[in-house]
Image (cartoon, rainbow, N blue to C red; front, side):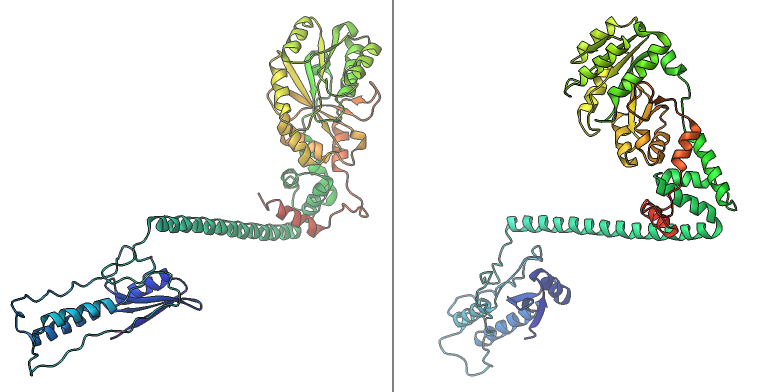
Length: 474
């Protein structure tokens, strides 16, 4: 017999190889686990037919038709392994089949065997056993069933494996894409340095002062390729001047009047700035035309601090607890030229920011002024603006300008979010340290170059790497 051996890491893979080589009618003799995988022994499908033909020939030689009137038992129908369970593990033996053929031959033979004719012996291949079989041996007539739970478990495991493979592929593709983008950005940076050295140098200076890569690229695009270093800075300054939205007078704020709430993170200077604006309004329109409201009931002494400023200026100060109280208070102050609301400071990631905005918008025609700390990083200021954004935002005020090394981050955020810059504060004195924004001063502070000895000074190659990390040429 032509017994074939198939070896694979798993029984499923070995069965697939067996079916590809011998076809779906192959006969599995046995399977067993060995070092490194699973071994399956099998016969071609026609081997069973040859065996049965030999059995029938032996019976025909011993008896022409019947023995003692008993019909010859029909040969056993060939049994093939279940095709639907091709991915399941099988273990079968031909011993039972051989024994059945021997019994049929014994029943069909007469009491006295004829002298003529060849003697056929039943084929009985040796049983191949495992020391501890994982699947119990069954005759060919009853192949081992595949449990539904096992099939479902295999399908679920296969699906999870495919999902994990897809996730790994996507991660690898993302990494390859990022690497290609960085390489292309490096090539583009090298070309920029060769064809427009002043533009490349300016781009590095803008990044080191605190501008985002997006604004730095826009400003650099305004520089001609053949410009000198001085011409490059002048072109960038002119481009930035066109982007900045500055309110250089009090006409739209103090003179027009209205209800304004000063909002922003903790410690940005809302109470002090409220007092500075109140003093500016008193000088122009008198104390009787102004009222102050405090919604800060959490900080110790916050309301008392505002009351002290109110007594000094001769301005009434009111405290409110909730939205209903605020609406009622504003209804009683509708004859005032201006009402300034000092709000409670909170982190931009606090869910109470949205609740505060809802309270102010529900109290009537209240416009908000966002205070931005000029000493903060650009990404932090981005978070603040996104948290406090809304249609009722009347502009922003830069605070702590005297403490900031550069105004580039604050100016960058105001430009990208389209905020009107209303005032600058540069100290604690009331009302002296409140100023209208000056374009020339803002541009000078934002574009001021770092000294060569500064640890924040960037070399030319470092600017290219920074742009590549920020997304290349996006």
